[in-house]
Amino acid sequence: MGYQQILMLVLGVIIIGLSAAVGLSMFTNEMKKINRQSIISDMNIFAGVANAYYKAPSNLGGGNREWDVDNLGMWFGYNYNDENNSISNDNGVYIFSASGDLLTIIGTGTSVGNNGSTNVRATLQLNGQTSEIITQINN
Image 1 (spheres, one colour):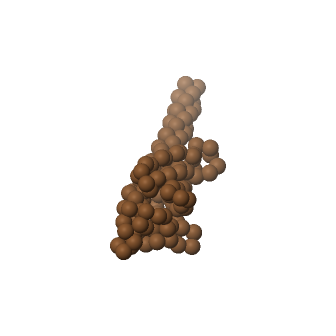
Image 2 (image 1 turned 120 degrees about the vertical axis):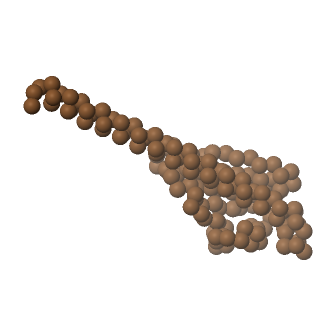
Image 3 (image 1 turned 135 degrees about the vertical axis):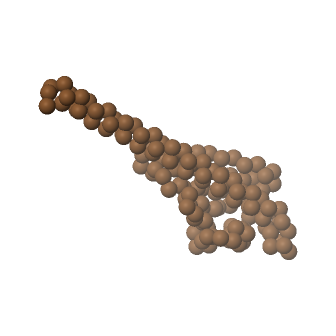
């Protein structure tokens, strides 16, 4: 082989390697974004169900304007773990806690977040009295 052919071969290998690295990086970043958006979407769905629970009277199985996380779990009806007040699905794990009129849902995703060491995470707070939702992205 001539010098030019070897140079073209080496150049081709470098370009293919760089393309693969950039593609892998783009794929990883999109997976983070998708997982983060998925856990936020799930938490909004849970907040809607929780809001219905909070406002339903106790004779219908609701909270009667009080949070009872264990009874709330029965309203979700699937994958609810009453030992640690959590729900898990393909997107992540969601932990529920209540204090006064506030219900807090912490969602932890399955993809490693922006800090590179812990999984994506978001927190949703639902005020039962006003139905106001505040969402914060933690990673």
